Image 1 (cartoon, one colour):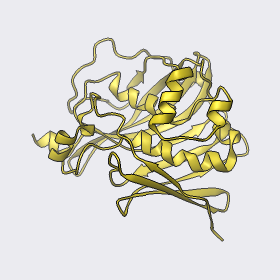
Image 2: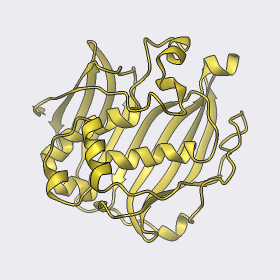
Image 3: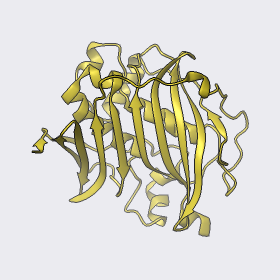
Image 4: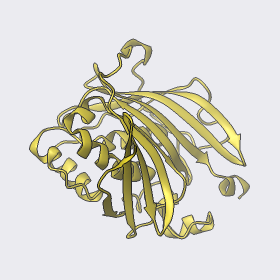
Amino acid sequence: MAAPLAPWRVSAFNTAKQSENKMHDDTVARRFGFSGGLVPGVEVMAYMMHLPVARWGRDFLERGLIEARFVRPVYDGETATVTGEEQGEAVTLAVESRGELCATGTASLPARAPAVDLSAYPETAAAANRPPVDTSSFPLGQWLGTAPVSWGGAKLRDYLDEIRETDPIYQATDLIHPGTLQRIMNRVLVDNVVLGPWIHVGSKMQLLAAARGHDMLAARARVVANYDKKGHRFAEFDALIVANGDRPVAHCHHVAIFAPRQQAAA
């Protein structure tokens, strides 16, 4: 029988109003049929992570598995409610806002983190000169990297405030919130191509080790799909996020619309 978890409610915050991705700008987003700028999907996924971390604690940060798909926007200042139900070994997750279902997902805690072959993911630098996006961007099989980044200290405190996270586990330890790893996955796109408005559609992330504030983190990503669907241009990425050049901390599958239909028709 499904057992509900205590819901988690946050006042959603659009962290990307000033970003290069103008899908988070109110005026531009309205031209694409939205009510305003979208709260980034990576932040909605971070809201969702609260429940499995509350359920499994540090174990989830070390080997948890989470998957999320975004079906409707969450808007700045609106209440986002994350609900979860334990079903067998997994927790089913949902995010509602404005009375609508905005995201769905699952989380679970494997008995152990799966082994990965670091050598299968070659270290790749971010693009020195980013080309502008077009239909040939993100060709199948292309390897992409991101600029190394750390998430400790004041940077982590600011991040936790932005995603409205109050779980003391991050303040009591040197462990960083796994939502920061999803921000790194967005950099796979942003660090390599000059994009127009674009949309994060969904992600799956298997945590392999708990990342710490002093770790220098970078993604090693390969384009595994590039296709058109209903006029939108999609790309999918398979990636390892690696700490300090030698310790995998997450295996991720990231899906994005890098050329939305309205933009392609403009």
